[in-house]
Amino acid sequence: MATADVLKPDFASQRRHFIFTDEHEQLRESIRRFVIKELQPHADEWEENTFPDWVFARMGELGFLGLDKPGQYGGQGGDYYTSLVLSEEMVHAHCGGLAMGLAVQTDMALPPILAFGTEEQKQEWAVPAIKGEKILCLGITEPDAGSDVSGIKTRAIRDGDEYVINGSKTYITNGHRAHVIVLVTKTDPDAGYDGFTLFLVPMDAPGVIREQRLQKLGMHASDTALLAFRDVRVPSSAVLGEVGKGFYHIMWELQGERLIGAAGSVAGAQHVFDRTLEYAKERKAFGRAIGQFQVIRHKFAEMATKIETARQMVYTTAWRLQNGEYPVREISMAKLYASRIAVEVADECIQIHGGAGYMKEYGIERSWRDLRLNRIGAGTDEIMLEVIGRSYGL
Image: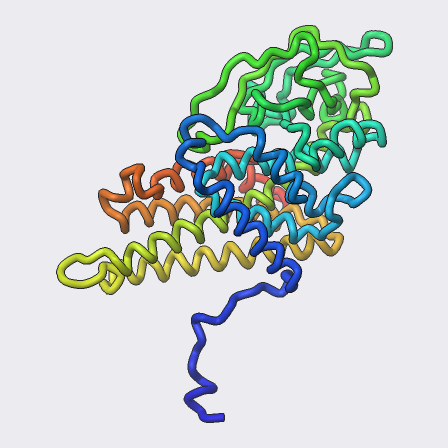
């Protein structure tokens, strides 16, 4: 072999991380074809009106809502990496709110039902949710309790064989369309972290009030609700997991939510990078493509390096999770870094587009608005820094 052939870098080679197999890549291609063909054409419409419920039914029909869920409940029985593939490929819908609404179903509300639910609860809610016939939401945040989960005020008081629930939740994705909510409540106000309990509350139960559809900076395609619970009665069989262990159940749930959010951040950053790279090769200024100017070329070099760093963090942490570890510190790091660089990249891509980047026509400003939520949702940057810092005994 000639020396020139050995030393020549191949920047066009197909990139695949070691965690992915041929089967994962086939799944990736299948999801991408579906998303581009059936979801992407509606992106602008859904930005105005939110996406319709048929998306859940269609994706359930195709098996995309249960990729890593057990086969006995209608899932595909895949590994954790299949959920990463779905998160990454949903970016081609050009619709951040859609991806978030689906992630609430697949990676936020379903996992605790499958992990802590009784067989009856799994049959009633998990099976139809995987089919896309039932829509789920997750109720943690309250008007006075966001990052401070321990400050939750929604109360569930035992009354014979029932519980009576009073309180409110806000910023609840899928809150207006959901059939059931995984609800975090306080059952013993004097027990500290051992005083929380999760409930599966049907959204059509008397006293459940969908008060307001909230208006947001981004993620317009998802519905976000302010909910009230006024003397809502549920049977004791509605308890999800153990009474008094709800705080620990939801902290476990948040780890999966954070890692899948980090994966979505990386995919979002890569997508807006790719679209902007095409623009920089085509847009002419001063007689040549703007990408040929050193200042623009270096912007892309910086962005690419940050995206690749975040990707490796996410994939390696996912490998540890898949192999039985519980790497909370690294999940927090990946979520913090990936969400930050996604916003940085989207902002830089607006700058590269110039005035066009500020216009809705190009969709770049939408990417920034949608990605900005990742630094807040599932744990703010500040909470992630606190988790990381405390993990070192500080």
